[in-house]
Image 1 (tube, rainbow, N blue to C red):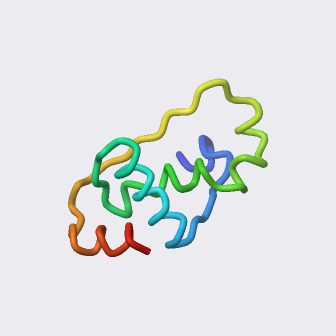
Image 2: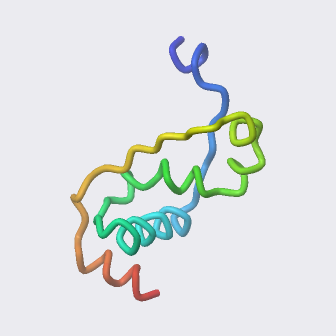
Length: 81
């Protein structure tokens, strides 16, 4: 009932978009976030979101990024790709 009543849309992102969001967090914010913590940013950066009415009707958008529970070796390998 909560989702039905409060969620307007769902955006699906692929693994590459999540890794790109993780890279952006690390390169821009100097913060290592885990993949699940970067999904919101990946969705907000997606073309699907930018084409939605929510994007055009919003003046401010908040995104929560979280988690540092990431293998730094894997993060480094992702950054080098």
